[in-house]
View 1 (cartoon, each protein chain N blue to C red):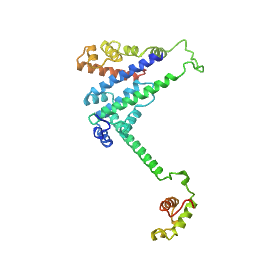
View 2 (view 1 turned 180 degrees about the vertical axis):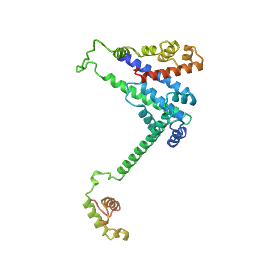
View 3 (view 1 turned 30 degrees about the horizontal axis):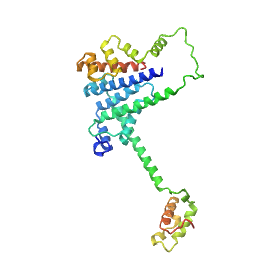
Length: 136
Length: 191
C-alpha cells in the first residue's frame, strides 16, 4: 500500500510538471483570455501584487529585526562577568568624573545628568581608557 | 554559469525591480503555478499564497539565486515547484511513519444504505490515480493517451507523437487536460 501510494505521488510530480509546461507555453493573450473566462482577470493580478507588497514588508521587518539583534549583541558586554550593577557603575563614573585626569568637557558632565544607559556606556568607555579599574 | 560569481546572478535589488515590473500575465503564471502544485499535492497543508510568498522571500533573501540569463518569472515558478516538491516529500515521509497498528483507531460502522455521495467517495478511494484520470477523460481517447503517457514519464516530442497530433493540436489538447483536471479538483476530485 505504501509503495503504491509512493508511486502515485511520483506520478503526480510528473503530471504537475507536464501541466506547468502547458502554463508556460501559453502566450500572454492566451493566459489573459483563460483567466477572463474564469472570471478572475481583475482579481488575480491585484491579489498577486498585494501579496508581493506584503512579502516585501515581511522581508523588511525580518531584516530590521536581524539588524536590531546584531546591534544588541554588539553592544552587550562580551563576558557575563562584566555585567555591572547600575549603582556601582554610577558611583564609579561619578568618582571618575571628579578625577583630574579627565578633560574639562568630560568633567563638566555630572553623573546625575546621565541616564542608566548612558552611565553603562560611559562606564565601559572609562574602563577602556584605563580611568576606571573594574577590579576596584 | 558560476552561481558564486556575483555578476552571473541578479542582485537582490535587480530581482526586486524585476518582480515589481511583472505584467498581469506574469502574475497569472505565478498564481497558476502555485495553484497547480497545491491542488495536485492534496496531502500538503501549505496554501498557494504562502507558497508564492515563501518563494519570493527565498529569492529576495538570496537563498535562491536567479541566473542573469534566466527569465525571472520562470525562476520564481521553479522556486515554487521546488518548495512544493520539498513539502510534498516531507509530508509523505511523515505519513509513512504513522503506525498501521494503532489500537486506538475507531472503526466507523458503514450504513446499510449508503448515499450516492458515499458511493462516489468510496469508489474514488478505491481507484488509483490512473483510473481516476482515465474516467475523467472518458470519451476522449487522445486525452487519455496523453495523460497515460505523462504518468508513464513520457515527455516532449515523444508524447506528441504518441498522441499523433501536430504541435498546435497537442498544445490545445494539453491545455484542455490541465483545465479539466483543475476543474475536477475544484469540484471534489482527490488526486
